Length: 511
Image 1 (cartoon, one colour):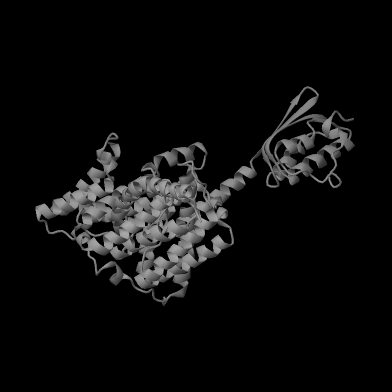
Image 2: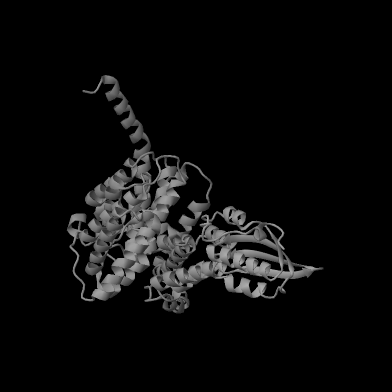
């Protein structure tokens, strides 16, 4: 039996957790509620499907996830993808794809391969999110202006001037006021008022203004209560498109969740992330959400940052935010029908614009990866999401190969000595260029070989050793740093010396 001291300590600990996680969970709930509705609108799905995903993400991932302070739910990063799947497959079959994608995530988490997803170039991920943000802005601007979004980015751009010319009075004003409040909330100084989440203030203010004004604008349509809205998924008629949807959702949702998990780890000093456990929990949540008629779920960095900044200490905050959402939608869900669609569209325009992160662009430019980012954005906006990811990945691989093959060999004669400087990355890709340059050194010449390489692989090692040995045999001399030291300095795996020997002529003056 537990002692009185142990019981008192547990009670005190529970009180401490509730004191920090209780208020934080309310903040996250107030941020997540309008976003769940808005993301459902952008996805072309029933509004209640976004709320179902919010509840499931909070409860399931909160309970079983591997990142205690990460908050999960429907994400804007998947809205455009889901919209396309709903157009092609229908909503019920898209829910089946969400459930199947969750099973794949669970399998990947069980196989403990979560960290492999972090091998995807950040430039591709940031470019994908920026492209999605641009698509959301272009589509939702039409709703803000009182019209309807078109089928693709080019059609939205083409129709936008006409939409601006024919502004739809009250609807447009409500949407613009919503955007204005969100921008103001972002730039206003920290004070007591700013502790209230900006999305909540914007949606409540827009809804109250519409009610007081008595305007006839389109509002959120709810087909029933939360439990009445639960619907089973349906099998698809187009199995090829369904398979593509399943694997696309599994890939993108996993990558976004794991990157959000890593980013969340950097925001606090508590327990570190267990990525495999997190991926398995994300799969559980997506499977359940799909079976209930909900949107796909990922870890979301914006809600997680709000959770941490509000003082959350444990996973109780994420769980409680799901409880508050469940209670609100179950008991007060009818009041959500008062929210104008143009207000939610204004919220989405602001969310979409924030996905184009200028800080990321600056960082990628410094690292020379801006081309990968730009190609990914152009592909996502101009073609489709998967094409954009594929193009960005192809450019990232091409850039890597170019860097691996970018060896600089400079040969010049100083008196009787030929000075050869090798820089860059000396790998198998650059061996032909190295051999061509060294072939210009006359037979029997005295050579000073300067190895200023960033990378040296086995092929480059053998090419240098072979040339030096052949040059010595023809009466030449070579001065250079021992290849073993170069190899070790570049962090390469030691070569089997019985297979590749380094003769004295490689490490000192030879005759």
